Length: 472
Image (cartoon, rainbow, N blue to C red; front, side, top):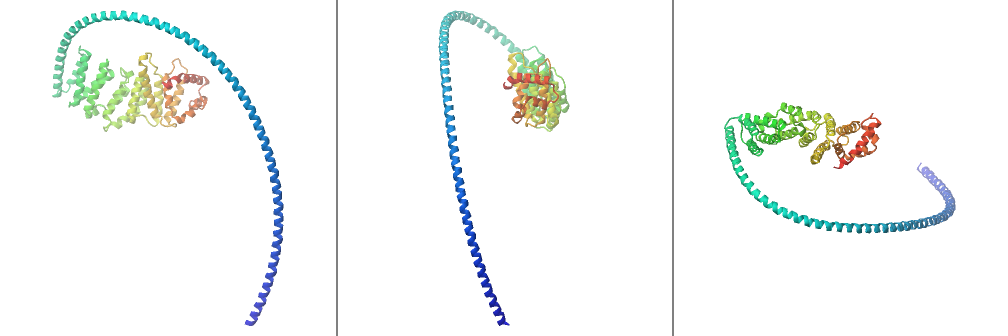
């Protein structure tokens, strides 16, 4: 069996080698034919590519040369036109400049002659007037010196007499104050009322009231402190004279700071509600805001401070509605900026801003030029409060404020809204300016839909009228 297997295996090996040799010869012949075909086709394609590339290169060079000629031709024409126009303009400029220079020299010569002539006349007049005034001055000075010496003697006598009276009054008041310190609690109110009711001079009253203000730093009974606070707060809000208001606030501050615990019992929730709701004699001066600020400075470290801030926040809108006076609004805005915990927030912030804008629109500039600086300062204080509340372009209070402004300026009425509304424009967040300036018509319809075209024209005219005030 092994021999048969080996013989068969040898025959199969011979057959396999012969078949493999035949297949190898066929493969080499076919590969040679395919290689010849590939080289012939590649040669034909290379010739075609070189011919096409040569044609395209010739076309490109020809087109490029034509474009270059056209560019040079156009450029030379433009250069010639430019040089001709520039030459004409230069001739015109030199001619006009020469004429203006001649006119200027002629006018300057005339003005110089007039100036020298007037100056000579003024020098002569000045020297003559100065001589006369010097003579009059020396004569008047001699008379005044005699009068001054005589008046000085009389004033010295009067001063000594008044000083004696003041010394007696001071000793009497000081004795009463010593009695108060020893335990007579209800006498201080009588002393304060008696000082202002006396017939002494205002300077003497001022000195005595200043001394009483200093007593606030010393220990006093609770009844005395409450009585002084009640009286001086009444002076500030209902006083008949500047002396009442000025000294009332000074004594009120001094005694409140010196007795913070008693002051917390005095400045209660009921007192604050009355303070912000009641009508006072001098509401237009903004003294309520001043009194609020001084009181909260003392109470800001106490337990009742947060509750009082909540009350102020709730009553703020009604307060500005009932007090549309620039001094009052400015004092209240200054108070809110100092105590930001009292600024209305959330839903009531929009109503507060709208009401504050309405009040500001009623505050016309003063007729007297002496008060215009104070007026501008007060308006800027209110504007700073808006700047704080308009913290973001999508703030609801900002949206409502802009609506209120456009509603006010679009209303046809005989009385124009105050120009100070223009001072609020610089405080609009910059991110909102493009949206506001895109189109006045679109903006107006966006904020206040339903406004008639006449209202649009009125508001546009008023905006133009407000422009100068934006940069004061």
